[in-house]
Length: 564
Image (tube, rainbow, N blue to C red; front, side, top):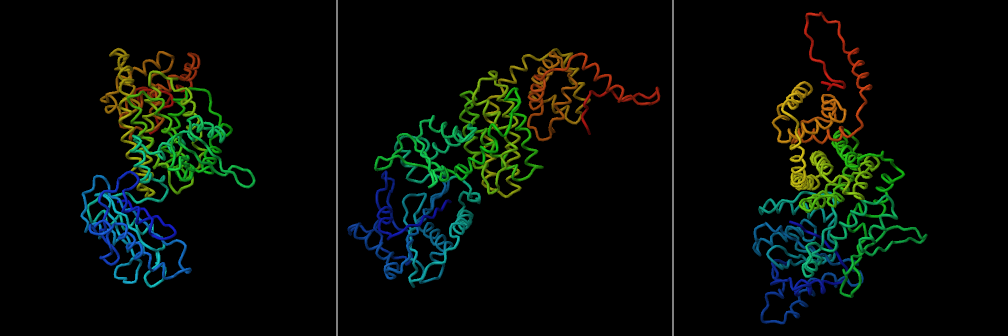
């Protein structure tokens, strides 16, 4: 259940006219009172033998009477409006149930505490099965002001209790860092225009992608204009740009003027100061990414996110989550059509998991941002899909750790968002990784070679060996091992290096995780035969033990053996 408090100036005349009118798109069906301050207020929706306009006038005159009695001593803000909406899957409530909910909401807000005969006047108007509007005046009947300190939080707390009492969908408590929701008016406008998303949502997605792609403030504004949007910088008296607003082409109001959205009203982290902080911490002067495969660099950076979330500073962790969200914003454009929709859903959902009241340190995530930007500019750099598949595999683990990090910090909405994003990513990953692994499996080596790799695996990772061998991606793993060996790598050594990169305890598919790691390691420059021989001699000298000749020692472990 979602209550939303709106305050205004003047009388309730215009609000009452709107509540009992047809709405902007004839969406108001059978508007009528379900409750009021005295339980017998005039009802324009249930007075068939009277002129509805006369009843509306009688109603708003009675509501405004305490304000009118104060005359010039009345406060400037006198109108309190609170729409209360149930979830689509909630049961349809009766008028009596909605009336009780309205009483609980105005009591929690301090508008009309239970049993207070001199409280503010209010009415609850039902428009449809799923929502009501509460209209009140902010002067008590005894002429005093209502005590409504922190009414937004109080109403939200009461809504969570109402959900339990009425068996409604239980929403997660928030920390007021979520992006602003589209209004009902914006939803109806999108519906009239045949659009699946509101203009606000479309603009927010485009701004997020521009932030993720940009390396400088000038590039950010240029990218916004490249999408066709109109950008209006906000300058201060000194001429410095302090903010910005954007308008979507063709999105106009009733006066045929563009509808402008400022960055701060789209989302808290899309204000110009917040964007500047992110760009300053990850711009081109802040980091130099070494030449190499950007898919591998992005994957390696993503694999480090769980460590930052479990062992790092909270500010660094928040910066990592913001960078992960930026990567997800750009990733759909690198994916095949079959998986693009799921990746877009994952990015949209994970947006909520990137925002909290913890200030973000963006500097530690600069490699991830720069490598993903490189991929964005050349998405076909790895046409077989292996790069995207391995990056998604790392993202699955990173998003799972994000969910646990938010749970630890009691960020209920962010935790839920990360969980939903994880489900979308799993679907997209299966769609993308399946064909890549099948292609690798068809290149699997001979049975004798597979037995040799099995022996290596049982030596270096006995605790994971059976699970890896039984994994569906085992044939793909031995294929990349054979290819790495063919380019000059030692199979046992590279397998041990892959195992030491990160534990497999939390991997959903350990063979698949090792496949991507070995593929990255295998594409690095292999040591020359002379270097391999020198390393082998060095290892033999340091591992030789003065054990009795009759005692059989353990098999020789490969260099860089896994530490227990």
